[in-house]
Each structure stands twice: as structure tokens, then as C-alpha cells.
Length: 226
Image (cartoon, rainbow, N blue to C red; front, side):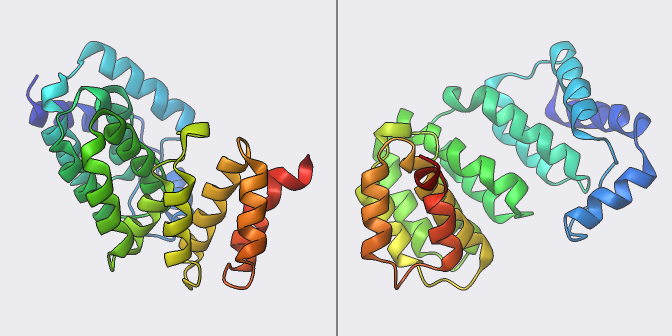
């Protein structure tokens, strides 16, 4: 099935299950930044699963397909794009990093960027030569969402996280005024603290004056429960 037909038929399925009352509430939850069909997450996932089983795209179609989905007004279609990325990211060529960057900076909000950052991380594991130049550019960008993606791309690396790199990126934005950057810093530190709590606690203590209260609180959550 061609990508255009895939999107058109998926839209028909979602439109059939649209709920205008839920759509209003879902849009308000996202600060009225996006339109919604009003399909709640469990139903959307089931509809997506059934549709993808009937119409599985190829890995080669992914760049065009996710771009088409991103260009639709309804947010649920971007969520299907995330599902496809999770399924096919390891089958993509190195240049797919350009598609990920495009997705990060278009229709940007936490509900997509928080998946796109770690998905970029999965691509960097396949093509490690891409990582340094890409994430260095992201962390230095004027685009806050690229900054957030650079801080979060190692989120699923576990004990293999490059903490020296994460520390460098955190310190570059430790005084950032935006909630989403401060929260990302705390989240990344908290995640790594599950594997190396001493390193994270030492880092937070050394840089206490520079880190926001939110970043410190989030970063110490797991450590303080131990």
C-alpha cells in the first residue's frame, strides 16, 4: 500500500471512532496545541495494531510515511508515527537521523519529543559515527526541543550511558529557565541513578548552585528512596 493510501485509510478508521467530547478534553490537556479525534489511548493502540496487521508498511516507506502522518492535523496520527518508528527504527539507514530531527522540530511537544530523543539514541547505537556531531548540534541549538532530545537520547542506555557526555550537556543548560529543559535534566539524571547512584549524587552535590530545584528533586528521587 502506498503511503498516501495508508494515511487516508487510517484516517477513515480513526474518524469512524472519533469522539468530539473526548477530543475537546484531550486538546485542552495539550494546551490546545493540537486537534484530536478523541480516541483514548487503549482504543487507539488497538485500532492501530489491527490496522498495521492488515496493512504492514515496509521499512523503506517509513521516512515518507511518518512525514505524512506528522503533516496531519490530528495528534493521534503522530502517535501512530511513533509506533511505526519504534517498530522500524533499527532498519533505517544513517540518513534517517535527518527525518528524526525534522520530526523533533515540527509539531513539537513533550508527548512526541520524549519518544523521538530515545529513538534517535537507538539509531546512534547502529551508527555511532552520527552521534557526536548530531547531539552536539542539538544541545547548542536555539530550538529547545532539540536541546531536550540531546539530553534524553541516552535514556534507554542504562548502565552504558556516557555520563561524562550527559554531564556536559546538563551543565550547558543547567540554568535554562524553561520547565521542559529542567525536567529533562532531572529525568536523565534520575534514570542513570538507577545504575550509578553515587555518580549522580556526587554530580548533583558538586553542581547544586547551578542546577534548578526541579532538576535536583527529580534527579534525586530514586536515590532518596533507597
